[in-house]
Amino acid sequence: MPRRRRALIPLVMSLLLVAGADRAIADDFYKGKVIRIVVGVAAGGGFDTYARTIARHMGRHVPGTPTIIVENMTGAGGLITANHVYKVAKPDGLTIGHFIGGLFMLQVFGKPGVEFDARKFEYVGVPVKDNPVCTLTRASGITSIEKWLASKTRVKIGAVAPGSTTEDAPKLLAAAIGVPLQVVSGYKGTSEIRLAADGGEVAGGCWGWESVRATWRKALETGEVVVVVQMAPEPVAELANVPLAMTYAKTDEGRQLVRFIQNAGAITRPFVVTPGTPKDRVQLLRKAFLDTFKDPEFQAEAQKTKLDIGPMSGEELERIVHGLFKLEPAFLTRLKDILK
Image 1: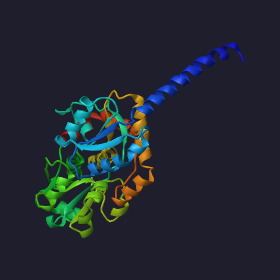
Image 2: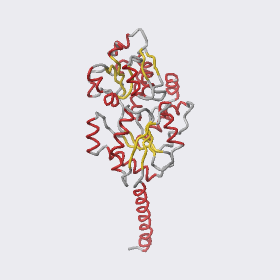
Image 3: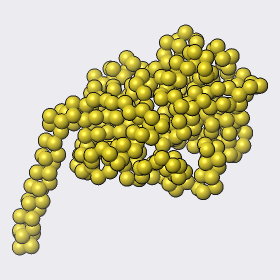
Protein backbone atom coordinates (compact mmCIF):
# COMPACT_ATOMS: atom_id res chain seq x y z
CA MET A 1 0.00 0.00 0.00
CA PRO A 2 1.46 3.42 -0.94
CA ARG A 3 2.80 5.43 2.01
CA ARG A 4 0.36 8.32 1.35
CA ARG A 5 -2.67 6.03 1.59
CA ARG A 6 -1.38 4.46 4.80
CA ALA A 7 -0.97 7.95 6.27
CA LEU A 8 -4.60 8.81 5.45
CA ILE A 9 -6.05 5.80 7.27
CA PRO A 10 -5.76 7.29 10.79
CA LEU A 11 -7.33 10.53 9.60
CA VAL A 12 -10.29 8.74 7.99
CA MET A 13 -10.78 6.60 11.08
CA SER A 14 -10.75 9.68 13.29
CA LEU A 15 -13.38 11.40 11.14
CA LEU A 16 -15.60 8.33 11.25
CA LEU A 17 -15.28 8.13 15.02
CA VAL A 18 -16.17 11.81 15.40
CA ALA A 19 -19.17 11.41 13.08
CA GLY A 20 -20.27 8.35 15.04
CA ALA A 21 -19.90 10.18 18.34
CA ASP A 22 -21.92 13.16 17.03
CA ARG A 23 -24.63 10.78 15.85
CA ALA A 24 -24.73 9.07 19.24
CA ILE A 25 -25.05 12.43 20.99
CA ALA A 26 -27.92 13.38 18.65
CA ASP A 27 -29.62 10.03 19.22
CA ASP A 28 -29.38 10.42 23.01
CA PHE A 29 -30.57 14.02 23.09
CA TYR A 30 -34.28 13.25 22.93
CA LYS A 31 -34.26 10.53 25.58
CA GLY A 32 -36.56 11.62 28.42
CA LYS A 33 -37.42 14.89 26.64
CA VAL A 34 -40.79 16.40 25.66
CA ILE A 35 -41.35 17.82 22.19
CA ARG A 36 -44.11 20.42 21.82
CA ILE A 37 -46.04 20.82 18.59
CA VAL A 38 -47.48 24.34 18.75
CA VAL A 39 -50.55 24.67 16.52
CA GLY A 40 -51.45 28.16 15.35
CA VAL A 41 -55.23 27.70 15.22
CA ALA A 42 -57.94 26.47 17.57
CA ALA A 43 -58.52 22.87 18.61
CA GLY A 44 -61.01 20.80 16.66
CA GLY A 45 -60.01 21.82 13.15
CA GLY A 46 -57.94 20.07 10.52
CA PHE A 47 -54.58 21.51 11.59
CA ASP A 48 -55.17 20.41 15.16
CA THR A 49 -56.39 16.97 14.08
CA TYR A 50 -53.34 16.30 11.93
CA ALA A 51 -50.97 17.54 14.65
CA ARG A 52 -52.52 15.41 17.40
CA THR A 53 -52.63 12.30 15.24
CA ILE A 54 -48.97 12.73 14.26
CA ALA A 55 -48.01 13.45 17.88
CA ARG A 56 -49.48 10.16 19.08
CA HIS A 57 -47.12 8.18 16.85
CA MET A 58 -44.06 10.24 15.84
CA GLY A 59 -42.27 9.84 19.19
CA ARG A 60 -41.68 6.15 18.46
CA HIS A 61 -39.64 7.14 15.43
CA VAL A 62 -37.39 9.70 17.15
CA PRO A 63 -34.26 8.18 18.74
CA GLY A 64 -34.76 8.30 22.49
CA THR A 65 -38.56 7.98 22.14
CA PRO A 66 -39.51 11.41 23.51
CA THR A 67 -43.03 12.33 24.54
CA ILE A 68 -44.78 14.61 22.04
CA ILE A 69 -47.57 16.95 23.14
CA VAL A 70 -49.73 19.45 21.27
CA GLU A 71 -50.49 23.00 22.37
CA ASN A 72 -52.76 25.52 20.63
CA MET A 73 -51.54 29.11 20.40
CA THR A 74 -54.28 31.01 18.59
CA GLY A 75 -54.31 34.56 17.32
CA ALA A 76 -53.82 36.50 14.09
CA GLY A 77 -54.52 33.44 11.99
CA GLY A 78 -51.44 31.61 13.23
CA LEU A 79 -49.07 34.57 12.95
CA ILE A 80 -48.52 34.59 16.71
CA THR A 81 -47.37 30.97 16.55
CA ALA A 82 -45.10 31.56 13.55
CA ASN A 83 -43.45 34.54 15.27
CA HIS A 84 -43.13 32.58 18.53
CA VAL A 85 -41.42 29.60 16.94
CA TYR A 86 -39.08 31.91 15.03
CA LYS A 87 -37.95 34.30 17.77
CA VAL A 88 -39.03 32.98 21.19
CA ALA A 89 -38.69 29.19 21.10
CA LYS A 90 -35.23 27.84 21.85
CA PRO A 91 -33.40 26.43 18.81
CA ASP A 92 -33.06 23.03 20.46
CA GLY A 93 -35.40 20.89 18.39
CA LEU A 94 -37.97 20.59 21.18
CA THR A 95 -40.52 22.99 19.67
CA ILE A 96 -42.22 22.29 16.34
CA GLY A 97 -44.52 24.90 14.84
CA HIS A 98 -47.57 24.00 12.76
CA PHE A 99 -49.35 26.98 11.25
CA ILE A 100 -50.93 28.10 8.00
CA GLY A 101 -48.39 28.14 5.18
CA GLY A 102 -50.07 31.11 3.56
CA LEU A 103 -48.40 33.24 6.22
CA PHE A 104 -45.20 33.02 4.20
CA MET A 105 -46.87 35.18 1.55
CA LEU A 106 -47.44 37.90 4.16
CA GLN A 107 -43.67 38.23 4.38
CA VAL A 108 -43.40 38.28 0.58
CA PHE A 109 -45.99 41.08 0.55
CA GLY A 110 -44.15 42.98 3.28
CA LYS A 111 -47.15 42.98 5.61
CA PRO A 112 -46.80 44.37 9.15
CA GLY A 113 -46.72 41.96 12.05
CA VAL A 114 -44.45 39.42 10.38
CA GLU A 115 -41.45 38.92 12.65
CA PHE A 116 -40.00 35.87 10.91
CA ASP A 117 -37.96 35.21 7.80
CA ALA A 118 -39.43 32.15 6.09
CA ARG A 119 -36.09 31.49 4.40
CA LYS A 120 -34.48 30.79 7.78
CA PHE A 121 -36.94 28.31 9.30
CA GLU A 122 -35.84 24.67 9.38
CA TYR A 123 -38.54 22.67 7.58
CA VAL A 124 -39.64 19.27 8.88
CA GLY A 125 -42.30 18.41 6.30
CA VAL A 126 -45.96 18.50 5.30
CA PRO A 127 -48.49 15.72 6.05
CA VAL A 128 -50.53 16.18 2.89
CA LYS A 129 -50.96 18.53 -0.03
CA ASP A 130 -54.22 20.42 0.40
CA ASN A 131 -56.90 20.43 -2.28
CA PRO A 132 -58.98 23.53 -1.45
CA VAL A 133 -62.75 23.32 -1.80
CA CYS A 134 -65.63 25.61 -0.95
CA THR A 135 -68.27 23.96 1.22
CA LEU A 136 -71.58 25.75 1.84
CA THR A 137 -74.66 24.92 3.85
CA ARG A 138 -77.82 23.76 2.14
CA ALA A 139 -79.67 26.35 4.26
CA SER A 140 -77.75 29.12 2.48
CA GLY A 141 -79.39 28.16 -0.80
CA ILE A 142 -76.00 27.95 -2.56
CA THR A 143 -75.76 24.28 -3.40
CA SER A 144 -73.85 24.54 -6.68
CA ILE A 145 -71.27 26.78 -8.31
CA GLU A 146 -73.90 27.88 -10.83
CA LYS A 147 -76.16 29.13 -8.02
CA TRP A 148 -73.20 30.94 -6.50
CA LEU A 149 -72.31 32.64 -9.77
CA ALA A 150 -75.94 33.65 -10.25
CA SER A 151 -76.44 34.98 -6.71
CA LYS A 152 -77.70 38.58 -6.60
CA THR A 153 -76.12 39.10 -3.18
CA ARG A 154 -72.61 38.54 -1.93
CA VAL A 155 -72.21 35.15 -0.26
CA LYS A 156 -70.64 35.29 3.22
CA ILE A 157 -67.63 33.04 3.61
CA GLY A 158 -66.02 32.52 7.03
CA ALA A 159 -62.25 32.98 7.34
CA VAL A 160 -59.49 32.98 9.92
CA ALA A 161 -57.16 35.77 8.77
CA PRO A 162 -55.09 37.00 5.82
CA GLY A 163 -52.55 34.38 4.82
CA SER A 164 -54.90 31.49 5.60
CA THR A 165 -56.48 29.30 2.93
CA THR A 166 -59.85 30.22 4.44
CA GLU A 167 -59.36 33.85 3.43
CA ASP A 168 -56.97 33.78 0.49
CA ALA A 169 -58.55 30.95 -1.52
CA PRO A 170 -62.06 32.48 -1.73
CA LYS A 171 -60.65 35.93 -2.58
CA LEU A 172 -58.51 34.47 -5.35
CA LEU A 173 -61.47 32.37 -6.54
CA ALA A 174 -63.67 35.47 -6.74
CA ALA A 175 -61.02 37.30 -8.78
CA ALA A 176 -60.52 34.28 -11.03
CA ILE A 177 -64.12 33.31 -11.88
CA GLY A 178 -66.34 36.11 -10.55
CA VAL A 179 -68.32 34.57 -7.69
CA PRO A 180 -69.98 37.27 -5.51
CA LEU A 181 -68.26 37.16 -2.17
CA GLN A 182 -68.03 38.72 1.28
CA VAL A 183 -65.24 37.36 3.47
CA VAL A 184 -66.06 37.42 7.18
CA SER A 185 -62.67 37.13 8.88
CA GLY A 186 -61.53 36.73 12.47
CA TYR A 187 -62.51 33.18 13.43
CA LYS A 188 -59.88 31.30 15.44
CA GLY A 189 -60.03 28.17 13.31
CA THR A 190 -62.14 26.11 10.95
CA SER A 191 -64.03 24.60 13.88
CA GLU A 192 -65.42 28.08 14.64
CA ILE A 193 -66.27 28.64 10.97
CA ARG A 194 -68.24 25.39 10.95
CA LEU A 195 -70.19 26.51 14.01
CA ALA A 196 -70.85 29.90 12.40
CA ALA A 197 -72.13 28.17 9.27
CA ASP A 198 -74.36 25.89 11.33
CA GLY A 199 -75.79 28.97 13.01
CA GLY A 200 -76.35 30.86 9.76
CA GLU A 201 -73.74 33.59 10.41
CA VAL A 202 -71.95 32.62 7.21
CA ALA A 203 -72.83 30.41 4.26
CA GLY A 204 -69.74 28.23 4.62
CA GLY A 205 -66.02 28.30 4.04
CA CYS A 206 -63.16 27.37 1.74
CA TRP A 207 -60.26 25.21 2.90
CA GLY A 208 -58.64 21.84 2.20
CA TRP A 209 -60.91 18.92 1.37
CA GLU A 210 -58.68 16.75 3.54
CA SER A 211 -59.67 18.83 6.56
CA VAL A 212 -63.32 19.25 5.53
CA ARG A 213 -63.77 15.53 5.12
CA ALA A 214 -62.24 14.75 8.51
CA THR A 215 -63.95 17.45 10.58
CA TRP A 216 -67.30 18.15 8.85
CA ARG A 217 -68.03 14.51 8.11
CA LYS A 218 -71.50 14.14 9.62
CA ALA A 219 -72.90 17.23 7.89
CA LEU A 220 -71.50 16.01 4.57
CA GLU A 221 -73.12 12.61 5.06
CA THR A 222 -76.52 14.11 5.87
CA GLY A 223 -76.34 16.66 3.05
CA GLU A 224 -76.52 19.64 5.41
CA VAL A 225 -73.39 20.99 3.70
CA VAL A 226 -72.37 20.65 0.07
CA VAL A 227 -69.02 20.99 -1.67
CA VAL A 228 -69.80 23.31 -4.58
CA VAL A 229 -66.39 23.79 -6.21
CA GLN A 230 -62.89 22.35 -5.92
CA MET A 231 -59.68 24.18 -6.73
CA ALA A 232 -57.51 21.11 -7.27
CA PRO A 233 -55.68 20.46 -10.59
CA GLU A 234 -57.91 17.42 -11.13
CA PRO A 235 -60.98 16.07 -9.35
CA VAL A 236 -60.47 14.43 -5.97
CA ALA A 237 -61.68 10.83 -6.19
CA GLU A 238 -64.51 11.39 -3.70
CA LEU A 239 -65.61 14.59 -5.47
CA ALA A 240 -65.83 13.31 -9.03
CA ASN A 241 -69.08 15.21 -9.66
CA VAL A 242 -67.93 18.50 -8.12
CA PRO A 243 -66.74 20.98 -10.79
CA LEU A 244 -63.20 22.32 -10.97
CA ALA A 245 -62.65 26.05 -10.60
CA MET A 246 -60.34 25.98 -13.62
CA THR A 247 -63.35 25.14 -15.80
CA TYR A 248 -64.87 28.55 -15.01
CA ALA A 249 -61.67 30.57 -15.40
CA LYS A 250 -62.14 32.29 -18.77
CA THR A 251 -59.06 34.52 -18.86
CA ASP A 252 -55.31 33.94 -18.69
CA GLU A 253 -55.18 35.81 -15.39
CA GLY A 254 -58.03 33.75 -14.00
CA ARG A 255 -56.28 30.52 -14.88
CA GLN A 256 -53.02 31.81 -13.39
CA LEU A 257 -54.81 32.64 -10.14
CA VAL A 258 -56.38 29.19 -9.91
CA ARG A 259 -52.97 27.60 -10.51
CA PHE A 260 -51.56 29.73 -7.69
CA ILE A 261 -54.24 28.36 -5.33
CA GLN A 262 -53.31 24.83 -6.43
CA ASN A 263 -49.58 25.39 -5.84
CA ALA A 264 -50.21 27.01 -2.46
CA GLY A 265 -51.98 23.80 -1.40
CA ALA A 266 -48.62 22.03 -1.28
CA ILE A 267 -47.37 24.19 1.60
CA THR A 268 -50.58 24.85 3.49
CA ARG A 269 -49.68 22.61 6.46
CA PRO A 270 -45.97 23.09 7.22
CA PHE A 271 -44.20 21.69 10.26
CA VAL A 272 -41.13 23.80 11.12
CA VAL A 273 -38.52 24.27 13.82
CA THR A 274 -36.65 27.35 14.99
CA PRO A 275 -33.73 28.71 12.95
CA GLY A 276 -30.41 27.66 14.43
CA THR A 277 -31.61 24.23 15.52
CA PRO A 278 -28.65 21.82 15.20
CA LYS A 279 -28.68 20.21 11.77
CA ASP A 280 -28.41 16.68 13.15
CA ARG A 281 -31.62 17.18 15.15
CA VAL A 282 -33.37 18.67 12.13
CA GLN A 283 -32.45 15.58 10.12
CA LEU A 284 -33.66 13.28 12.90
CA LEU A 285 -37.02 15.08 12.99
CA ARG A 286 -37.34 15.04 9.21
CA LYS A 287 -36.73 11.31 9.08
CA ALA A 288 -39.02 10.59 12.03
CA PHE A 289 -41.77 12.70 10.43
CA LEU A 290 -41.67 10.71 7.18
CA ASP A 291 -41.30 7.38 8.99
CA THR A 292 -44.45 8.15 10.99
CA PHE A 293 -46.52 8.01 7.83
CA LYS A 294 -45.26 4.49 7.12
CA ASP A 295 -46.25 3.33 10.62
CA PRO A 296 -49.16 0.81 10.43
CA GLU A 297 -50.66 2.13 13.67
CA PHE A 298 -50.60 5.70 12.37
CA GLN A 299 -52.09 4.59 9.05
CA ALA A 300 -54.89 2.74 10.84
CA GLU A 301 -55.78 5.81 12.91
CA ALA A 302 -55.59 8.11 9.87
CA GLN A 303 -57.93 5.81 7.97
CA LYS A 304 -60.36 5.65 10.87
CA THR A 305 -60.54 9.44 11.16
CA LYS A 306 -60.50 9.88 7.36
CA LEU A 307 -57.26 11.85 7.33
CA ASP A 308 -55.68 11.86 3.90
CA ILE A 309 -51.93 11.39 3.98
CA GLY A 310 -49.37 12.20 1.32
CA PRO A 311 -46.31 13.59 3.08
CA MET A 312 -43.74 15.91 1.55
CA SER A 313 -40.18 16.09 2.82
CA GLY A 314 -38.71 19.06 4.64
CA GLU A 315 -36.23 19.56 1.80
CA GLU A 316 -39.00 19.83 -0.82
CA LEU A 317 -41.07 22.11 1.41
CA GLU A 318 -38.06 24.38 1.86
CA ARG A 319 -37.52 24.56 -1.91
CA ILE A 320 -41.12 25.60 -2.58
CA VAL A 321 -41.18 28.23 0.17
CA HIS A 322 -37.94 29.79 -1.07
CA GLY A 323 -39.50 29.91 -4.55
CA LEU A 324 -42.21 32.28 -3.29
CA PHE A 325 -39.59 34.99 -3.06
CA LYS A 326 -38.91 34.66 -6.80
CA LEU A 327 -42.44 35.36 -8.11
CA GLU A 328 -42.76 37.60 -11.16
CA PRO A 329 -43.18 41.22 -9.92
CA ALA A 330 -46.28 41.95 -12.03
CA PHE A 331 -48.09 38.85 -10.76
CA LEU A 332 -47.00 39.61 -7.21
CA THR A 333 -48.49 43.10 -7.50
CA ARG A 334 -51.78 41.59 -8.69
CA LEU A 335 -51.82 39.14 -5.78
CA LYS A 336 -51.26 41.99 -3.34
CA ASP A 337 -54.22 43.85 -4.83
CA ILE A 338 -56.51 40.85 -4.51
CA LEU A 339 -55.44 39.80 -1.04
CA LYS A 340 -55.08 43.23 0.54
